[in-house]
Image (cartoon, rainbow, N blue to C red; front, side, top):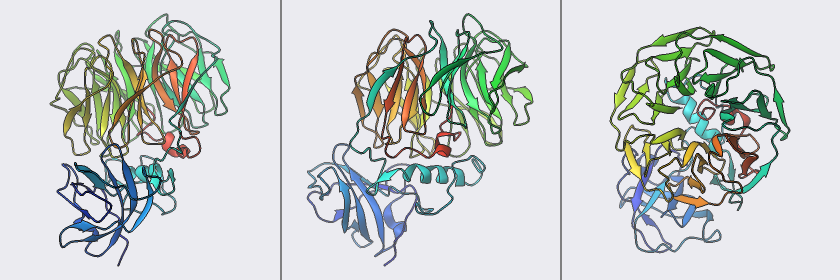
Length: 463
């Protein structure tokens, strides 16, 4: 008997009771348990999106079964769940490259080449475990609190970026000063070189050298903060009103600005060279934020675009079909632990996601608002994706690691409250103040936070 781990294994089952599981067909985009090998053991998780169980089981090819040898944790107080009738999913929760292996990194050195970077990223995510359960939240549903800001004004900041020293920088929209929160929660301001009364920058990206680049919305110049805190501006090749919203760090170190109303793409190389490139599809208010996929592709998040658009790791721009489109549909996106990309619903009346294999699908939401519910989202240490309350939203909403959508109450709500969020390495999610008079954060699973290199990864560190 050998202990075996395999990537992207997920099947269905209709087994009832507390005994051996009879395994069904693989879920679309996944493989079955046959790769584990007859008579070998593996980790498993089974859930019906309400109850769950994590354990060690033995796979038997004859009859395609998985015994439940050791229960590591469960929703039944650690005992085997007595499954009722109905469909469940069973999957291997750890990456095959070995969770216990040392020196896993979350950098992007091999993104888009051989999958090592995302496997290591997953490994780092999965290392945030408790009693063998990935993303277990230590029975904390997330403590929501507010804190004082030094500077507030209407439409102040759009998005934020975690710096390599642990500071969270808010990206200035109408603010006439920069504002940041240190790793020990000290709020302070600093001078900017360029400011505007509205629509200066929208979103930011951490460059490989530690510089934070603000993404130009209507600003005529680029602006960045060096790793040592020096603020400076630089020339852009293309500028227009409402040009770009959000940006993504590509595998080769280029920072791509996401085209909102821009008619060309624009990027900054790792050496600081600014250049433009052709897009396949352009329209006013097209895309709102972007996400780096596990294969190195950059997906633009559709706002009012009627098709998706992406840039491959080789720099090839292409479009693809969406299931749902609408005016100002989505605002920002989040990469889930399983590699799926979730678009954050702004005015959309349903969720939309792209699987790791490229399949686009929609799912039901509990709360929607046609005036703009959420702006941006954040992955928390327990695997939940939190949507950040936006222009007209009043209720928090999240998607769990297993895909369950739920809502929760916030402490502070007001029109245009927040825009974007940032995960700190201590496990706190900070909502970026847009028109809010106070800061707001969710303390999620602080006892088992993500490692700092996960929080700084280009998979997470984006609008």
